[in-house]
Image (cartoon, rainbow, N blue to C red):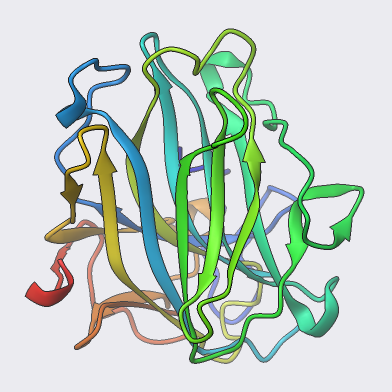
Length: 274
């Protein structure tokens, strides 16, 4: 569930010009993955896990919020009922500006409310249960994984693993809506994205995504061979100077550079990473 964007005017050299108070510019990498059927009872069609590795290669140099996340939709036999996003934040509210997030929303057809979740063991603030303090480092790889909660029926858990130390941190569980997600549940439409609240001409920031993977209920692993580039349009407030590209290890998202990959382009991942 890519969050809806509000119309504004183009921006280059200033803040993203949306009428939304969040003033965010977003760009996405949509997995070209065989679609799962909502609520399917066929195990090879029902995804039950998604994961991706994230590295912040060139970290932010301003105090504005940056958010890099893996996103999934939640479905049951009746269709999509919500979605969630988990990843790292550059957030000045937290010590050293580093945080982690696992939050989500009901589908727009069901009201679009913020999903409730369990309390995290990571430190945070009572007024923002989705975001917790997490001491991440630049140039270090972190695996984010979403999977069924082992403790709460119908809930989905996100965890983050520091691939340098091997340390694993469950973030928390997102709870299903009443009466939803308790049948044959699954994940749909994985994607990864960057959401930037800084001015369009703020110093360039780069993150790398790699090891993208989904697992179905039969235990079969699925990896996208290509990713589809999607940019928030200038008329919707997106910064026109963001781009995506591949390197020898994965796929990069970069701000404050000339766009080299057009909207809708398909980027093929290196064979070893797909």
